[in-house]
Length: 141
Image (tube, rainbow, N blue to C red; front, side):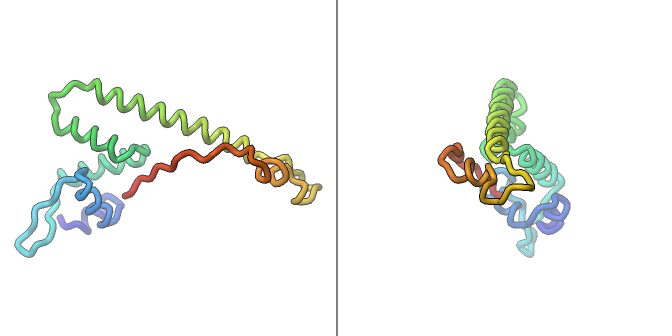
């Protein structure tokens, strides 16, 4: 199948597929005589796996590690358990950060007071009491 067909099936863009190929997450496709990429069902399965991992907010490094384990099926699964456990800890940390963010944003405004008297404006956003932003993680693709 061609790249456009694969992208449509995986509900992503052709640029995403090319990016995953460039990053080594998706193997390069063979080329046809007319130089089109020719993807197989194996590419589609691997792309589905990558997209599902991304939906779980896994980093490219985490996905690469999981794919390496798939490509070497005789390896012990302990490192996979460790990776998943670490990812769960990261999720727990982010839940705690979001809970703190929610508490910081929760204002004491009532409909009777003016906007300038609202607690979220006067206290939370006008002081330096807001926790520093954590380093942003980006997931391209």
